[in-house]
Image (cartoon, rainbow, N blue to C red; front, side, top):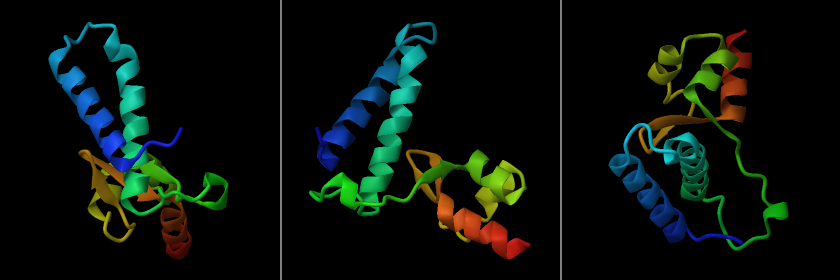
Length: 112
């Protein structure tokens, strides 16, 4: 089942509300972060135009990675990766930095 961008945004909003109104020891806190990350990634991918009516087998979506993963690839700190985010084509999605893995790999190769 493919969800539209509006469906993804609605699900993400509901998840954020659930996160805001539940106590820190509520059972939902064990699995909600995993689903929030999936929704965030899906929204980021659809935002850059990779979600469409085209069959997913025909698409090659960019793999998005977090700041910590980008930092490991370029062998720098997470903070440094965030500082040079514009050079790495980074973007903030729901308060988190996401980077295109290929762009980060190319940057790391150019540094050598």
